[in-house]
Length: 422
Picture 1: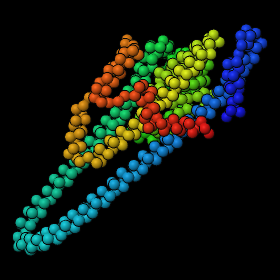
Picture 2 (picture 1 turned 60 degrees about the horizontal axis):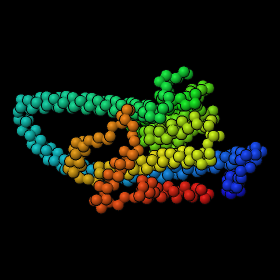
Picture 3 (picture 1 turned 30 degrees about the horizontal axis):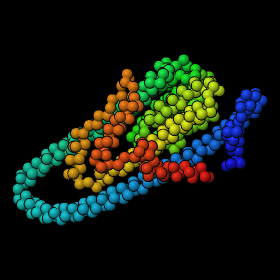
Picture 4 (picture 1 turned 180 degrees about the vertical axis):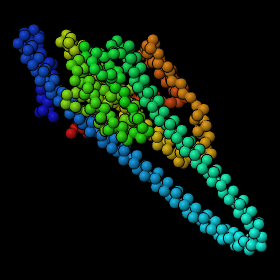
């Protein structure tokens, strides 16, 4: 690794040993600038290598999560099969008892038939009564079947309407979030684009149009959502062919669908498509907004450039960690809900469902005109820490220390270190 990226080391050594004459004399400063370009080229190769390693790590983690889900599903299916087998055995026993009862009834009927032969009038009357009863029963069964089909049809209609509503809510959430971010950071949001097509959301940075399309599953089965996302990425070619459209476009998906996405970037030769969640919108837009400042990069000191790179790297790492942690806890919550439905007694489960329907969470409302001040958030966090410490709860020194203390964070860091060593 040291031999491959030797230009970076040479550049930093040259900067540390630079004299006053190296900065003043044009030919010496030109040599330093040339070395910086070569070091930056090696830095880009290192970043690309790390990105590929991180992508492979995410794919393997996704595969492991999928295998765990399939294992849990097999356990559920096995339990269901055993339950169905027991039910069928009970049904067979009940039918055998019913057959015995039928035999007994048959014996009685023989005796009744022998008695009915003595009176033909009574036999005909009983036959007519039973035929009438059978007709009523048949009509009742037909009516019940018709009602059941109608109820199933109404349930399916409501389910499709719910899916459509969820997709519309996701699309509206993405639009409102992007507009709020643009308003907060003074980025231009384009309601109507000057090129052919109608993307869901478009912002303008450095005289280029950046496309953000909202995508959500159209069915309750999200297993095929990855193929749908890939097809939608290919469909963005209609925007990429325009000159002023940025060749890096984004598909915004719900956070609970991340687990089925195997790739979060698609290289389409002429353009690139990135799959992100709503949580990643603000750091990505802020990173894109930094492009406006690149034309003044020659006026920055090395420390200022390093600070900008560090901030962008921190934004990117925090966004990826947030997606990873949300995905981890989503799987844990789903597993807990599955166990509740399977293991809790029916009477307790019904009571829990009643309390669930009675609960309501009211998170703080996000208002356009209100700016979230950092000092106000720090004050609220401090109040929570003091209240927790009064109850004997020990808090980490900082939020970053608390995140690093999580087992999931240590696992992610260990994976990244292994990739770096390779």
